[in-house]
Image (cartoon, rainbow, N blue to C red; front, side, top):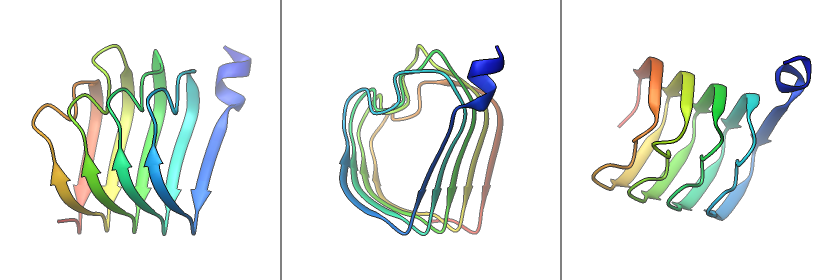
Length: 106
């Protein structure tokens, strides 16, 4: 458990063509996107068993595919603040989410 809590990913001021399948396959304490742009979030991009915190701040997501947040994943805290999503496919968020916060987003 100690190792799990030490894994943190910060993607700040980046432009990504895509988050591919299995972009986040391992459990982590935090995955954070700040002032980022992601053109495509592929199916099962977020497929880790457990992600304690996934945060999108001031980030643009152009296309989020069905199953991007896998049904095999537990996300304890998912926050979207100042996020713009152009296309959100049906069933994009299949992960179990304990706490969901969406604010100042469209």
